[in-house]
Length: 497
Image 1: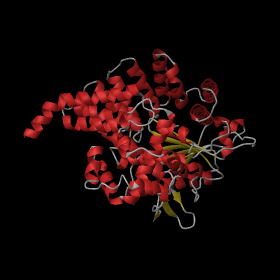
Image 2: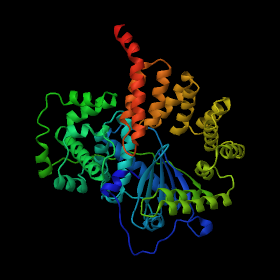
Image 3: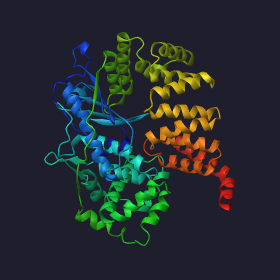
Image 4: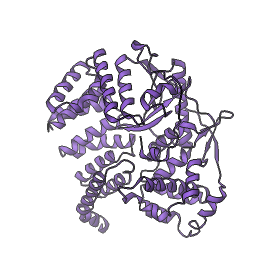
């Protein structure tokens, strides 16, 4: 879960006094579990089949509503992972009974954990869905804006998190003020825009500093969209073309000086516009399959380790380990279980296990990916790893991490021309992932395409936002510096020509 949610406490619903039900596998007395796939979601749930399929379609509507921020025709690729429990009480076992949902990240994008009441319905309220809307907005905005300073990234996600679909007329309502954030800035003030521009370079911030930055980012985005809509749209247009953010803003707001002074009146008066638009049609086709007991134990293990709450990490891991052990009793060669346990094995054991899983599950791309990772850990850059990477990418064409793994292999073996195609597929599927952008930058550099390497490296640096360590940020800066230094002669020659 992102730090922002822990700080601001947004979109978290509290429960008390109820006897908790449990999201168990059917063999232990739980409801049947199933996986429903729609055009852009993979939903694993213990809802009944009609409600599960309807929920997947409603998630498509949720996504479509957020995308209206960038126009009715905007529809990027990618699949989002969702765990949907049948009711809030099912989640109590994993969260101390205090949360109705949360969101996190996987190598292939966001994972949204939600609870229903017979179905996931987008009512005309914000409720506990703000968490998921915020994280999904981060994910989707990267397709629209390949370069984003941190204040724009957080401000847009917070602006969009209040999205609703009115049940009465199926219109999408965008732009409502966040009550919690508005209350914060009225009580504590806000940062100037110049201070927010410096956020990308700040590290080791206190909780209070982060809270002030998040709230201020929301305020500035909300204000500029309402008071200077055309100029803010022009700013976004420039970001969509990959322009350097500060220069893009200066160009969009050239000649405008009053926007700084008018913000105080905006906060106090609270007058702003709300966008209401018809919800465009969404794809309604879904595919459903039943989940095996081992699949359910893996889901439970993920929930124990990733859910918010005050349970100590050691206790969480103990419970997760019990779930994974039970999964292996149900299916000794269950691929996803072994992938979760692989980090606890030494290199030799991991490689032996990966080879066994490939033998038992030759059509499972996750097994091939584990084999490739195990070979990489051994320092094996032979054709065996290449074949494993290729097979994983072939079997998981919609996995950004599998495509990126193949592309990075070609970085390691200095064969950039082979790596460019899978790198481009990875970027197309997940343009907000700094590691994926860095892979393409490295391939451009190795190919002698210096200006593109520098541009992509800077774009990767832009996308280092929440939860990134200082060491990682410094390493990305070092890489960009290397590209810039090495590429000066090539850049000069290009200009001369």
